[in-house]
Each structure stands twice: as structure tokens, then as C-alpha cells.
Length: 327
Figure 1 (cartoon, rainbow, N blue to C red):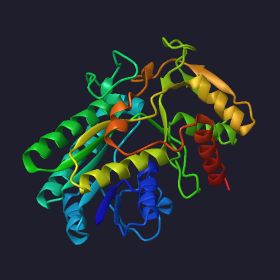
Figure 2: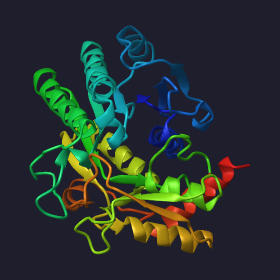
Figure 3: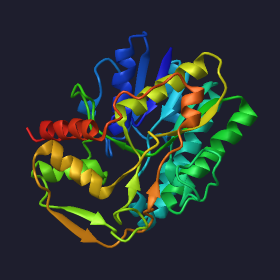
């Protein structure tokens, strides 16, 4: 069995690589990453790492053929909502067009399984909370639209060419590997818990809260935070399902409950024992008031249960990683 992880030096991709190796199933792992945001040192030993871009179809085809890849887990792409509003064409190039090239290479080489990291941003402002997979998709940012278009491409390719897929709509991924092997290392990362932990460790003087006038209990945005280790465990369950003859699926990945920005700040203060300096700012373009997952389908289709679904524990692993980076 051989799997190609795109973006495998990045935040979630490196966790995926460590998780597959730890599973101990004689899995051969290849990684392609252009290192624009990924960190080579976060990858585990024993993987075949190729520095390159997924839009380079000749390079991808070479990897698929030489490594006899049977499954692709696709993480590579751009992920910052406000940035996508400023640079929409970059997001359509990096997310949509590049993934089209990757899917075409998989079709040409007969790769049967494709797992795609999508996003809750495809829903836009959901009519009901929590939001289920059959809710209308109405992405409100280029980031969300770039991912939604990729979902459509993958589904169409699957219908035409027999690929089996897993489309995983992430809510807010947070935390770090409990064993300290990898974590969110991107200097420009905008993830809330990451940024709050950077403030707690003295790397930044304050945390900016964007928007305090949302229609939420405390006026700040509410998100469903899922620990990155639980998220990659879901990917492994989907991989096993597809390889075992199971059908394609599209699922939300979250815990089914939300925390506000102010609640996250309070959690970081509790865990770190430090008070965070906070600055208030207007809403950012593309940000939504509240997004929380309906996880009924996840529970029904997969033999999976969360192991890290505690906000303080999520913060603790993120904070430990941030301290490690500061050494």
C-alpha cells in the first residue's frame, strides 16, 4: 500500500504522515510539498519527500508511477479567508486549477482513491446551526468557492472515471501533536488558537479580535474547533473505508459544538496562566458569525470517536508546541 500526501510538510499533512507511520501497517508514504508554508523538519523519517508543486503534472505523474500510489490524501493549498478576498486569482490557481491537474494525473495513472481536504466555508452563512452536509452551499469567499469548485470537479471525475473519494469539510483545526513531533509552524498563520498561544509565549504583544458585533452570545465569532490529531484519525478511517471497498463519502469534520473568540482567549489564559493583551478591530472580509458542524453523518458512517475533544487540552498541545518552537 502506498499513499501520496500533498502538502505533507504542512500543518495537517505532517500530522497525517506521522499518524500513518504510527499505525504500523507497512504503509509506504510519499510526500510532495513546495515548502511555501510547510516545514521539512516536521515530516517523519522514512518518507519519500519530493519538493515540488502539485500543478507540475509531469512530476506528480512520476511519483504516482514510481511509488505505485493507490491513494492520494490532498492537503496542499491556500487557506486564509481574508487573504483570498485580496488575492482571489491566487486561490483559484493554487486550490482549484492545481487540484484539477492533480486529479487528471490520478485518472491517467489509475489511482483509485482520493481524499480531499475541503472546508466548512463552502456553506457560507448557514441557515441553521449546526450545519449538516445536505445544507445549501453558498460560499462567501474565494477560498470557500475554490474549495467548492474542487468538490464538484472531484465528484464529476469520480462519476466519469470510477475514482472513489472522501470529501472532508473541515471546521476549525487546532492544537498540535500530543507527542511534540509536529505542529502549526507557519510564521504567518492566522489560526486563532495559534495566534493566542503566540501572544501567551511573548512572540507578539497582543491578540487582535476581529469583530465584536456578531449576532452571537458575546458578540465575537463562534467556531467548532477540532484537534488536528482527531482530524487525521478521521482521514485514516476514510482511507481504510475506501481501500476496503466502501463507497465514496462527503462528511463534516468537527465536534458539533462551538466556542467564541472570547471563550478561546479565556482558555488560553487558563492554560498558560497569563493574561492576554487584546485589541478590538472591525470584522474582516469573508468572516462569518458562527459555524458549527452537525456530526451525525460522521458518527454514522465511520468507526471513529474523538480522543481530544476538550478545548483546554487542544490549547495545551498548541501551547506546548509554541514553547517548543521558541527554544
